[in-house]
Image (cartoon, rainbow, N blue to C red):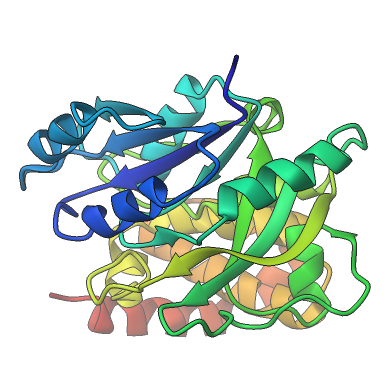
Length: 294
């Protein structure tokens, strides 16, 4: 019988954290899933570690793919090319699948799979059991990810997507010499066509690492200006909140300046707004050049 779910894990030099995730997968009472590890160029013995696990006779299948280091978004591109299950969920290499998560996903999807949803949105919690950001409003049964945030939501959420829907969306672009594109760009595009079913339960236990992708953002801004300009362009196109649009326009200007783009004001989805905020964008670009240095 075909498995329902792929748990995919992009990883880069996380051999020291992957065992926690592995143990959380072994603890699932429902083994209706595949674990797909996308190794983004690790040099710390990750492959040997995973190969040994593959020999242990687990009730779930483990698939391992090694690729040249290109950043988290390229690992997601590779994963979406390979996943052959109906659903998929990304669990990062420093996180863990919450107890009973696979069972909850399966039971929930059995109830709503025929309603046209792109998937399920659930909760993340920290290692002490505290919900990351905010939970879901009472009575909320469906939402988009961007709609959740625009209506006062906060904190990372766990997204379980239909694989066919993710393949409808364009792959993350790859820019020469850069290794970052915001993952939420694909989710924002998905939001324009689909809703997510709300599951008010913890699906993932998050343990943020000091050297993780969310750390040292000034360096990220400086090193990946084209990736950030793409992210801001998507947000300028689809976001509705005035506050978000103002902030996004400033960041769009700054990223385009750092990338040396010509004609970026005319190319903006909101040219008047980005032109008006250009002085602040210039200031942000200057600050980034200073703070983003090694």
